[in-house]
Image 1 (cartoon, helix red, strand yellow):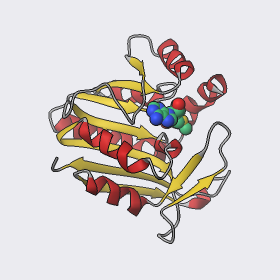
Image 2 (cartoon, helix red, strand yellow):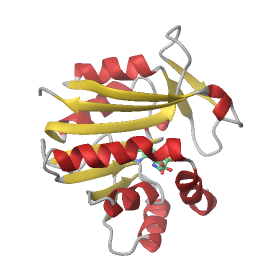
Image 3 (tube, helix red, strand yellow):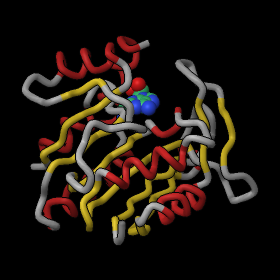
Length: 201
Ligand SMILES: C[S@@+](CC[C@H](N)C(=O)[O-])C[C@H]1O[C@@H](n2cnc3c(N)ncnc32)[C@H](O)[C@@H]1O
């Protein structure tokens, strides 16, 4: 599905202002905090990595799929893209100013999510930011629920649950944007965009 995904997602991202308003804020906050390297984990074809770089962020991409990393490199010459697992990054502790996980944590099963978030926190410097967007659950009756996805198993999560897990790894919520379910014409899911900052190890 790498080619099909690459063909539509860049334009979809660019054409929907609410999808990138938090990415813009993240870029500004990372810059105000002094900048530094930022990993776009589960970067897919690299459109968010490129968007961050256009806004002055020293961003690079990481993705599990060699096909998507190849597509990202082809579409964005000069930007670094690595094949890698966001659950075990080849990055030194505390070395990043920020991490973006845009619709990529959805493929992380609920029992693995805590260790994956701990890994993203491990690589963040104190004061560093994480931004994650995902299909969300309404309310807090459940923390996670599987949903149909064309490529691989996927889960939607309760935003409060993700913030709780981030809190356990030393990150504190800064802001959240939840796009109303009616704005998702396909599945009618709310879309959560969560921004958090590392306040302790
Ligand atoms: C729905 S796509 C989102 C891609 C891109 N971030 C975007 O905003 O369109 C999910 C991406 O996460 C990647 N992914 C899933 N699990 C991963 C993991 N453990 N480590 C790195 N990438 C992963 C997939 O290969 C895929 O490119």
